[in-house]
Image 1 (cartoon, rainbow, N blue to C red):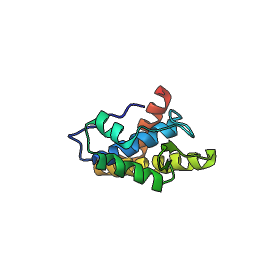
Image 2 (tube, rainbow, N blue to C red):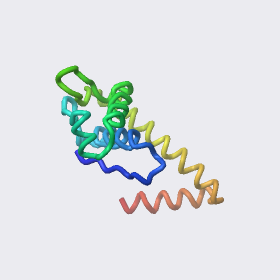
Image 3 (spheres, helix red, strand yellow):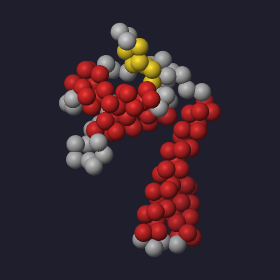
Length: 124
């Protein structure tokens, strides 16, 4: 698992870490039971504080993505396929909401937006 931190981003470091781990779970790169690096190791690898990695792991655990066992480490939690799909849909909906805001901000019509969507859909 590779995590890339953008120090010049407006997104907090812990949030960048958390989102990249979630993305790896969504993509299936990280699966149920896979071990995550220790807090200290991840902090060292990313050149961030342990507090930053701890916050990311705590948020992931609170959201049900990982399970931490004292003395053993942090592991990807068991995610039911329908729950994983629901999480993925929620992320898509959030992205679409932001996209619609941006489209409206520049005055693009719904028709023009759908034409762009169709263009990108066909390229994929």
